[in-house]
Image 1 (spheres, rainbow, N blue to C red):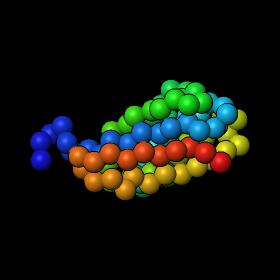
Image 2: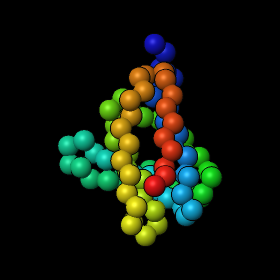
Image 3: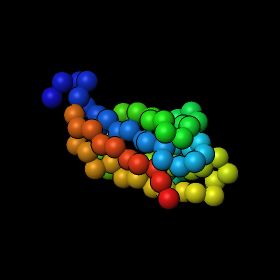
Image 4: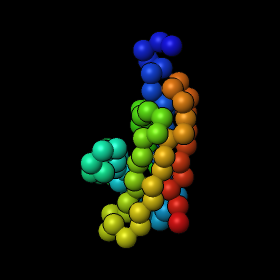
Length: 84
């Protein structure tokens, strides 16, 4: 596998009525680290990741929280739809 394929491509589609932020969850500490700018309704955010990584989407008021686990393998793509 070539170097450029040593990741999984994931995209987050914001299907909510307000903006969201995407966080990556550290596997050991469970610390949530912001990895996106504001993603407005109907917009898509692309990230390079690895199988098994966990991402968390929050609305700007942090009332909505959704977790997503990357199931795509290296060189594959996966889409996550952030909705209620």
